[in-house]
Length: 320
Picture 1 (cartoon, rainbow, N blue to C red):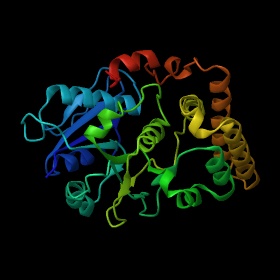
Picture 2: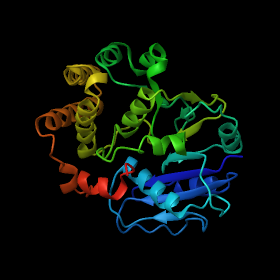
Picture 3: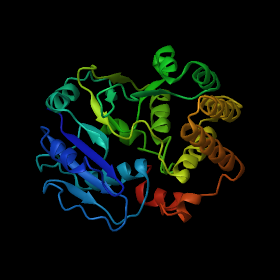
Picture 4: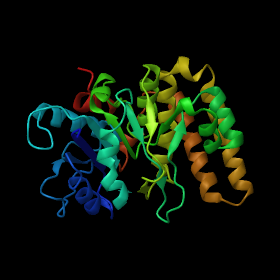
């Protein structure tokens, strides 16, 4: 059975974290690394088998995964303590819960994946067991305009070849992850998995999906952060993505995306959903800020104490 490296990213922990780590430790052939981005956080209930990486500061989600991969691959030991490569990398957010049936099947699903499959996505469920956000579609002028009118689920169904798993929980072959140089540390939060999967699909990679019978639960799947700074960071991340994927998204995509957000603000306001309207507006504000001031990193000077992008690249870059 293929050896598995599970990386859990945390910022101060979650109510689910201890149980999640215990679950991952119990998976056959799995080595577990917890990356704690919040300085000063101490986890007293971490299983002894879990390696903890901390003290590096708030490098964000993707860079934290890179950091763990760098540490573990430099160490070179697999889940049994023997030198060797990990076949799969499991990327896990700290607010995920893995149901028992999925726990039992996950190593088998990865071990039986066809050789040409690079990524396995999983169905997401909300806390109440209802549908969660499992997939997104790569942004282009066409897909974003379609999404604005018909919604994300319809866009995923319309463009399955451009669909990819949300970043909270997915498996990627470690060799593929390394060939792609991992996550781009230019992204602090948001769009890091969009960027990763855009590069994967552009290189001819293949994404497949586990059967709906094997879902995971994601508590935070319905939000992009409740703090204003995080909402604006989502908009700023979109401008980074637009610059790095200019040819793929198409000229003028940022304008289409801005119009998409403006329409969302209006829809939510008209239906009385003020919190959702405010959230969409803050994302739009962040997009405008990111387009006007591309080098500005307000999160680095905020209460989130984000590590600046140049320092993230030094700490967690996998491009050599």
